[in-house]
Length: 391
Image (cartoon, rainbow, N blue to C red):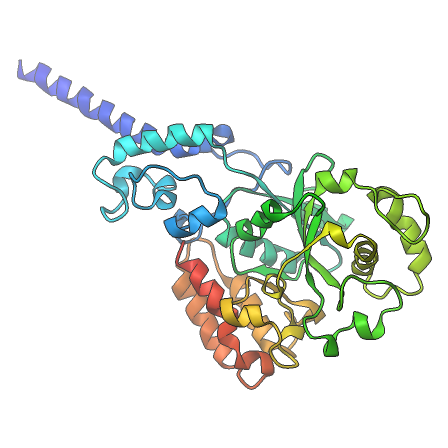
C-alpha cells in the first residue's frame, strides 16, 4: 500500500513540476517559436535582450504614459512579472496567487500583442562599431519589440545579416549611426500618436539659438523655420509619406516623394552642404504643415553645449537622445560625448546597469569638467539615471 502511495505522490510531484514549468513559458509563447531559439532571420523583429538578467523596463506610473495596457491590480509590477517565472518572484513584486496571475497575464497578452517598432539606419564606411553601439543603446532601454532595418555597403552586409526594404512598413524611426538612446525608443515612437492629420514626419530644430545657427547664416537654399531642422533623428509615418503630394518650387503640380527628390537634388546640387538634410529642409520649407517638431533633448548635439548651454529642455529634463555628430565619439575634442559612447560600447548585456554603466560613466564625466559640455555633465546622465530605475 505504501508503495502505491509513494508512486502517487511521485506522479503528483512530477505533474506539479511540469505545470510550473509550463506556466513559466506562457509569457513567451506569443512570440514565434514559443520563446525557443530560432535561426537568425533578418526580417524578424529583433527581440530585446534585457539588461540585468531580463528585467523589464517600465514602472506602473510610466507605463500608462507610453500606452501600455492597464491590467487589474494583481501583480504589483506587471512589467517585471511578465518577464520572469512567477514562482521565483519576490513577495514585494507579485502577490500570493502568482501562478494564477501568470495564466491571467498570458490570456491578456494573447489578445493584446505588443506593437513592433521599426528602427532604420544607414551604415557606410567604417561605421560598424558605431552602429552596433547605437543598436545596443536602443535595446537596453526599450520596452516594445524592435525591428532593425540596416542599409549598408557591400562589405558590411555579412556583419548586419542583410538589408530590408521598407515598402510594407507603416511607421519608421530613422537615426544616424552616431545616435545613442538614453531613454526607451518607445517614448519617441509615441509621438506618432500626436501627429495631426497633415503631419507626416517629426524632427528637431538644427539650432535653438539663431546667433549660432548654420542655415540662417550660411544656407543658399530654402530651409524650414528660423534655424532649419536636423535629420539625425527622424520619425516618419511612411504610409502618409507614400500618399502625400508635395508642394515645390519646380512645378505648379504637386509631386510624390519618389518624384521630387531627384529633381530637387539636380536643382540645388551646387548649393547643398549637408546632403539629405538640406533636401528635407527644402521640402518642409514648402510643406511646413507636414512636419511635427520635437524639442532639442530628443536630438542633443555638441552645438547645444560647446557655445554654452542652449537646450533649456535638456537642462530641465535631461538628454533623451544623444547625437555625436562632428565625430566627437572618436576624438578628444568633446570628451563628455566620448565618455558616454565608450561606456555603452563596453557595457555587456546582463551586467548590473548601475555598477557597470552608470557609476563608471559618472567618474569619467567628472574628468571632463574643464570643457563647456563637461560643466553640465549631470544633464547627460539625468535621464539615463531615471531610465535605469525602470529596468
